[in-house]
Image (cartoon, rainbow, N blue to C red; front, side, top):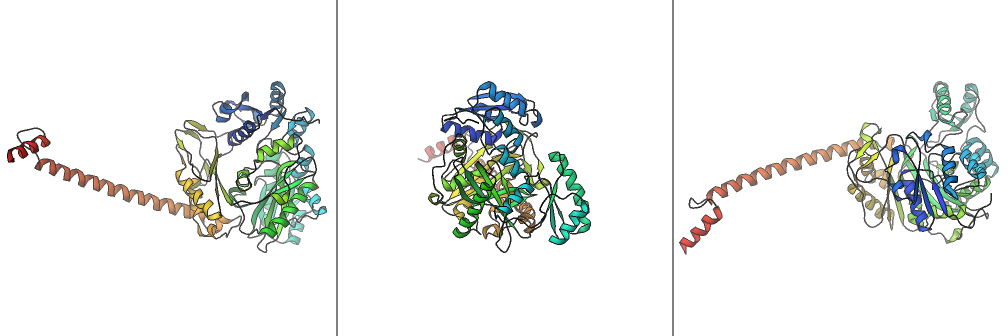
Length: 511
């Protein structure tokens, strides 16, 4: 595919806050931004802010944001040089990337071939072993039947994880603690993989206990340059979905950062990766890092890295996509301060994270030094049940972790969203929780330290406090009114209907 010297128009095949993020990068680069939208999103901010916008279908994603034919047709019709997929939807769909390549449209991301390799965890694992990248112990390929799974698990030792070779975002993962559970979970994991990805291909990994999830941000260009942009600590999760991300990690020093960062770049180069991506690692309690996958897209948590490096990752994505060379060396990158991100989801953490959708009559987004909010919310908007529950990202920066934490905590107190429930109460609890403060984290952090119950207890305490304050205010108001009535009665003069007039007359008479 012939790459132009400069991209002039980008169609954004996404919605919500990430579409807005890409639109802003386009503005900074004087590139025309072209939004697409479904019936459900006709009043969304990304439609209002883009230079051009086009309707692509009904509310269900399959009829709009996942409709490859319609998106490609729209891009060609309006003259878009490139397509940015954001994250989610078609961002890791190698078929979509391949269609863009065939239609001579620049796909702002990796090549379809690299995406195919990173999307197939078993193929990727074999390549990583050849490249001397440490991987989690387990099967060397997909497991065809239950008996094979039993044999491999017995050798690896329980507990084990059953994973779909085509999974992602925590989907298609099951744990088995013994042979009996393995038999049950194998069938369920197969069906789950088939339902989510259209095919069942499972592999087995040793379930490492007391682990942390740490990722390294990557950039690779078409000139053979590869850079890592440091790590992000992503251990605070629920059902394998990240909730809080921050940098630097309390268990990564400069030596480890350099060593694992070099491994991350080598892993990406082994699959001929291009553009921005993330190498994901698990760290066990002995401090050993195991590569698990490459996420071949822009990450939700990319603002964390932007705040400590001063780099615009979306701008860099576009520059790499149009053939430019990365213009800084690895040794020139310096981590400045610390940054924390909380994912604000439209879910009720008091009701097992049940989805919460509907009208948002009003909202208040926090501001202040070191505070960034990426969101599509505005007063009067609607949170749809058709799409992902992420409605905002609150990111803070500080000269050190403690300053970033305090800023994040105080911003959460200012963040007000009416009409729906959100995960904000959980984050308020986490930001002051002692294990979080001391860096004692693992992927089972919420369960291990009972964070949900701590959140409930904090909410009940706040409710009692507010109730006591309301009672005190009521009593004070009642006493004030009673005292005012007595004063009014004592100051009354029969000569006038006004107490003040009566007092004036009395003073005049005394004088």
